[in-house]
Image 1 (cartoon, rainbow, N blue to C red):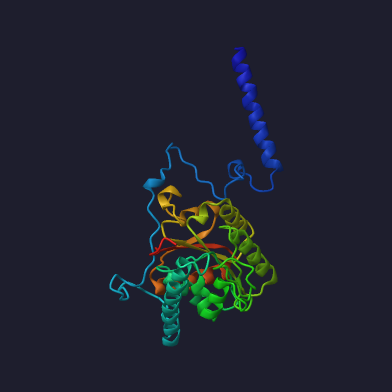
Image 2 (spheres, one colour; image 1 turned 135 degrees about the horizontal axis):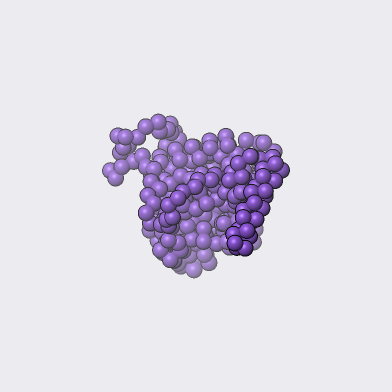
Length: 320
């Protein structure tokens, strides 16, 4: 009897608490809709289960060109650049490949101290920069020399930087491959991986405040996404509503660590939903697919003032 009275009093107190909460709440008269402030949407279930990641369908890879280099028959509403633009894109990729060979061999001969090749990732670089506006700000890592070439930076200027000679715009104060050009809206590279991500978010936030119709794109590899700076950048970009494209070149090996030792999820785009960030996955070796993906990504971040993660699935031929 005594136990039943205690239980009854507890139930009455809970009922009074709910009534008091509903009277004081300005959000909703339904207490269940106001309890969990840590999530945006509430969906209840009476079935207890475990959300096993391996059972989720992988994010598809967008592609336009098939294995023979022809446009797939089921492609719809795609943008094909004009002939002059296509020729420029092709010439930039060939030039980048030639320059890569010269500078890589120079490094192996001891003429320069450091070099990172771009071979195998030319389409990801050229396709992405071709879809941007010239005044969009670029934060790069080590394999974006093609972005500068496409924007008008000359091979001589790239080589001057790598050799650190008297004609180097940076006066030999940087390591090789640490390019930068204010005239081409290309921020000078930093040696530590991933430091460019939170910096890029800050620039994107300033563009949002100034309303100057500019966005930021920041390039990084899937290995860099394991650094803490990447998670900080994703969270800041999402909570501050920044117009930024996170362009991940996923070549599967970071510098020397394979992807299965970096993460166990569905690549890098799978991190987007956790931060409330939209995502695109594209074939990074398909230059037309990358070009179209960047155009769509830029349109999204500018129209919605929101970040987007774009993962380009690619590979490189040299382990350097």
